[in-house]
Image (cartoon, rainbow, N blue to C red):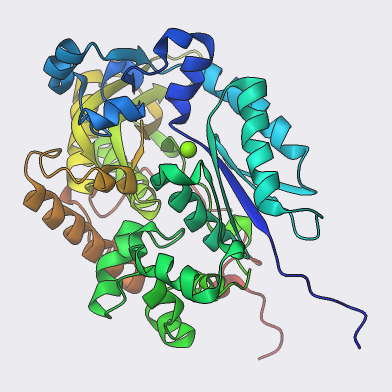
Length: 434
Ligand SMILES: [Mg+2]
């Protein structure tokens, strides 16, 4: 008999419920039991909602002005986002959770994985204790999902959140395969970690509609059509842990894209091209994380050094509805540029930012055809962006681009003395001999 015994993995994910709202409630108990909405920077759109607010039909990403009537009618409390508070509550939460597992991986501001493999005791019971302890110590409600892989743990957490009768804890390892499969059959592929709503249509065309369908899919076949993450996801759904943390980076709340120019830039047209290019990059990143931005930022600056006149200006515009459409985001950034550009300065840097990012999952879960005014237009835009990303991945960066990006980019970084990227670019790998 082998001395090495492979224990089945037991991965926990602990995730706070409506985190921003819950963090606010810790210090203002009057907010319990009533509808509360936290809104984005500049008080633009809803970025977190209490269950009561969700039940009243407040949508994720809904602009404040559209909620006015509901707010009045139901006495909804609206709070500006308080990021320092959320960061501090997050630290306290993570400190408590770190006491429970030998390996902790903080995944985002309000969720972390614990690898509890080999920890003695009834893990479902431990999960209940964790939930009770977090509530007792810092008054945050959390849900705990458990599975033999991170992907299954994430799905278990989703099940716990959506089924109040589970009291916030669900452990796939407590059930026989047929029961697990029943659960998986009821979960759309868009709910799966690392798959998301973006790949859902493509999977659907292959008749893969549920987590169970994906579990039973051929990993090698899907590797050819998707990325290696998809192949690993299939293994993970089958209970085999193979996704490391870095492989699916946590979604960012803000995406910044900026760079210094190689030359001092005076003309407006060059800035238009640079802003268009940076925003195109940022929008690609946004779509990669299934995100939609609520506000757009743009800045320009002269060199802070030397004797020349100095200028720095940055502005942010809130969008009417969250978007990840390159065309719209570029046009908004250019509007800001037009507003902040002053002729005569020598600009050395410009940049753009996408902030108040919400998840496509959050928006779609609300099943709201009217969020964007016209759902069909959005579907078309999402499809178009998908096609554009697909072409650019296959045929090379910027094959399909917005017209304002231009072609020559004379303002790009001076790299005449750049050494080859020996270790990171295939073209630059050293060749020995011939
Ligand atoms: Mg959460």
